[in-house]
Image (cartoon, rainbow, N blue to C red):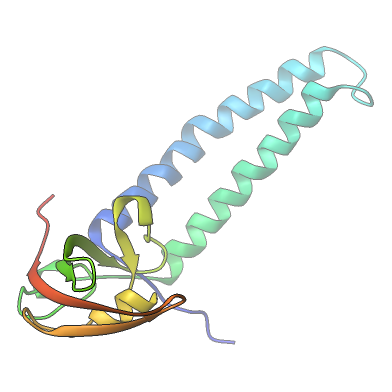
Length: 161
C-alpha cells in the first residue's frame, strides 16, 4: 500500500517540529518523573498515580510517533511558487458568499494543517477543492451538505509570516 503524501506549508512544518521537540525534550521527562514519583509510593497494583502516568506516557509516545510519521510523508509547499494569480495550497483567498453577501478569508492548506477555527481549510474539503485553481472574479459553486453555496473570489494573496 502506498502511503498518502501529507502536504504542509512552511508554517505547518515549523509547528509540527516545535511540538515534536517539546514532546521529546520536555513532556517525556515530565512523565518519566511522574512515573518515578508514583513508584515511590510502593505497591503499583492499586496505584492510580502510576496508572495515570503510564497512560500519559503512552499518549505522549503515540503523539511522537504520529508526528514523526507525518514528517516522513510530508511534502513541503515551496512558498516561492505560490502566486496571487490562482488559488493554490498556501494561498489565502477572500471570497464573498453571494447568498448572504458576506466576505470571509480562508487559507488553503493540506489536511494535516486544517483548522476551521483559524479559517485554515483543507485542499481536500469541498470548499478547498472547489477554490483550487480559480482566479479573482470567478464564481464557484460548492456542493455542501446543506445544498449548493456560491462564492465569488474577491482576492488571492500569500500571508506573510
